Structure formats: C-alpha cells, structure tokens
View (cartoon, rainbow, N blue to C red):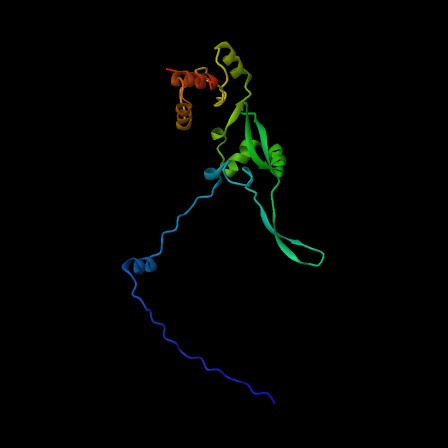
Length: 194
C-alpha cells in the first residue's frame, strides 16, 4: 500500500539585507530609452551584411534534417553576387551586391525601376564612366580619369634620418667615429644626413 505525501505551500517573506543606494533605486525605476535604428535600404545601402541591395532578400532560418530525423538549425543563405551592372540612362557601370534572382528581375523591369521601388539612390554609389563623350572630353582637355593613389609608392624624396636608440647605444659601445657610423647607417636605409 502506498502513501501519498501532501505538501502545503508556505509563504516566505523576503527582506532586503542591505539598503539600496540612490543610484540603484533610480536605475531600477527608470528604464533606459531604447534607440530606434532605421533599417531601410536607404540608410544601409551597400553596408548591410548579406542582403540584396535591390530586392532586400536575406538569409532564412531553416532546419537540416538527417536520415534519423535529427534536426539542426541552419541558415539558408541568399545567392548574393557582387555584380558590375551597366546603367544605360547615365552611361556608367555601378557595382552592386545583389541576388541572382534580382539579376533576372533587372532584365525584366530595369535597373532604375527596381532601385526606385526599394528607395536606393543610384547616383550616390561608386561608378565607372562608360560615356564616350566623357572620354573624348578627357582626352581633349588632357585630364586623366580619377585613379586611386598608391600609398606605398615612393614619393621620390629620401627619408629623414632616424636612428633608433638601441642603434645609437650600439655605435657608442663599439667606439670609433660616431658620424661615420651614422652616415653608413643612413646610406644603407636610404636616408639623408642633415
């Protein structure tokens, strides 16, 4: 024969052992204001991680189901490609990150129509000029097309002399002519002795 135990709930009074400071009281009563972040395509164009710039497609949460029906979470990503697209109205190439579905839709609707639907400003994007009139004008006026500067290219001017402290200490320890050692060091590293 089995016996059943019954347990009666007991009310427990919880008291705070320490008094709260004024800061803790205000922090607990007032909630911090939540910042609203606008996630429209206009605000995040080109910067929004794995998202199509023209359709707004992004990854889908799904499951990978094994033969034994064990489920594991899986992200089903969008087939995104960086694509250089010709914008016929402005005679320029624009680089976009779009889904392959958007590529087909561009052929059907047109680039400007799709961009207008999403609110994407095509003029604000980087571009490569393809207008023959613009190229002729550049040749006539002797202006070169804008190009990125090579920051690592030598400037043509020799570097100013800089001898590290450890090198100065090593030269002093060796003894001999300090000026000759400094000049030799400068010539080795392409510096000018002033």
